[in-house]
Image 1 (spheres, one colour):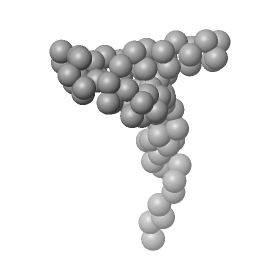
Image 2: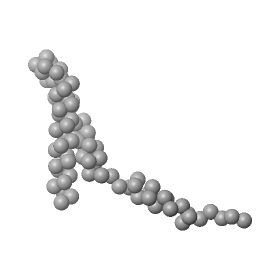
Image 3: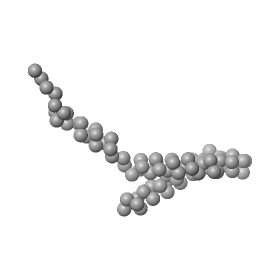
Image 4: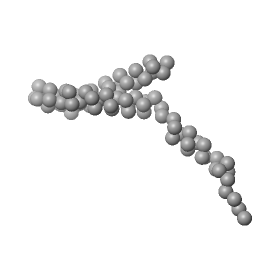
Length: 79
């Protein structure tokens, strides 16, 4: 009779380890997204009032600034 052992699967540790590791850029995008979720409702009325030439471009720029700020913050904290 053949038995299956978990040690026979060499990629088990690799898959489990890869699921736990998140690169700093992914963490910065995730943190920046939550920061953008806070800022977007506060600035939405002003952006879509007609004063801004392209509100979608400004919205995307704010998102990129949030991701950049969160990456800077993440790198300063992690040392």
